[in-house]
Length: 331
Image: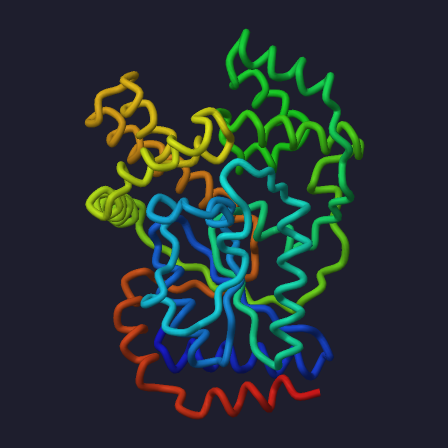
């Protein structure tokens, strides 16, 4: 896909949304390390847009390097929403994300700008794109304790098997070791008596999905390079700082990278073993992301090999896009 073709696809989508009197949304999806951030910033600049993060780890303050947060320089002045909104020891659920994401998207549209939903957390993306109906599920404390005891006795895989039976789609996205999320997903099924897949309402937005795709072997190289860069940028030191302030067993501290490095810092693993596990677990996570993204049948595919030239061309093309977008978003 060329830059001109991509610009045309987006412009046509915005025109179609306006003609149908629907709210436009552009979603940029792809596995970790695929290049979503850089592309989203270039497109947001050209289409007078703002970015809404769909990353379940970037919501946490102080967890910067390990979550790959965009820096101020990288953002190039483009506003980013739903980043750094809770502390690492605070609870944050899917229902919280959905509420805040809708608020951010509608505020962007009110400013007559274009919202870009960007990230790789499948549940977050689907909650917005497919409009999951997520009424708050009241905590079932006694039931939670039983599930936690079951996980401690038989291992987290036992809980994950329960989730696979109750809500297969959620199980594809949530890792077995993420006990808190597995329990929460089971709790929602128990409380609502139906899986998330059965809790959809009509879409709120006319969404264009742009999917960045790489050959598996290329993606893995990029994952390894990204992790090496994180380590060079001070991820170990960031993890140690977090450990001084927050309990190591808190959910947020089990995030990719932090969880593995904590085991090395506390002496359970060697640093070399922790780094290798970090890379392995990230590759596994990318596989789960790709499985989740296959649910979206109508997507515009962007080949990873085209990203570099796309970026250069987007820097040149579309001088009048801001004006065009203002016209498309006028009431």
